[in-house]
Length: 248
Ligand SMILES: NC(=O)c1ccc[n+]([C@@H]2O[C@H](COP(=O)([O-])OP(=O)(O)OC[C@H]3O[C@@H](n4cnc5c(N)ncnc54)[C@H](O)[C@@H]3O)[C@@H](O)[C@H]2O)c1
Figure 1 (cartoon, protein in one colour):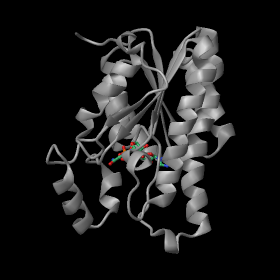
Figure 2 (cartoon, rainbow, N blue to C red):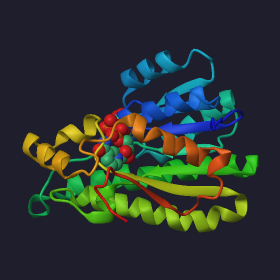
Figure 3 (spheres, rainbow, N blue to C red):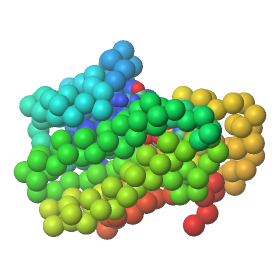
């Protein structure tokens, strides 16, 4: 079965990063118009040049911590592509730090980007989804929110917040035919993973039931499913895509 997204308009945050660019590229292939958001302008431009040949891709350098900038980016994307029907929030940061040494600034930065930034993007797309009478929201959470992890407490707290936001928003948005789900990946081979020391990486790789870190192309199909008509019975769900890092 081929999953198609013809007629959909997707907003993808973290679109210059490993998973975000993979999602954006697959969405274009599936027929969607796609607005790319990221705080890395050069990375965004490169992704846009690579996947935007069909003229249905816009890119918007924006920091998701800034609600006014996010609102303006969605408004600009809407002008070109139409009201959004899909939101994928992949913008996030991570940092290895023991809770004993955790500085308040680091805590705030992690919560601001990973949790508040997710909410600001959700808030900005809701009016368009209401106008379209439907929507799919796919938030990137994390295996860490499900099982904890060492030296990763602000990230775990922010991602647990994302999981909670998605569940509650799924209830509030159900009357408007907007489905909200979370994907909680295990370790995936992107830049984010290599913030951790080699020793930790080797140990973690050995623990995975699949025997290796995930690849972006092993995460993307779940996003496309959730965005497509075939995914219409998923809402309020957390999908554990972790190579056996989390067993449920
Ligand atoms: N890679 C993993 O092992 C892993 C595991 C679990 C969950 N995740 C989640 O998957 C999602 C995608 O991660 P990834 O692996 O592609 O990471 P990545 O580091 O490759 O990409 C993250 C992107 O987010 C952007 N970004 C960061 N802060 C931003 C901000 N304030 N405003 C706008 N953009 C910002 C970065 O510029 C980058 O392009 C994230 O939510 C991450 O937490 C990743």
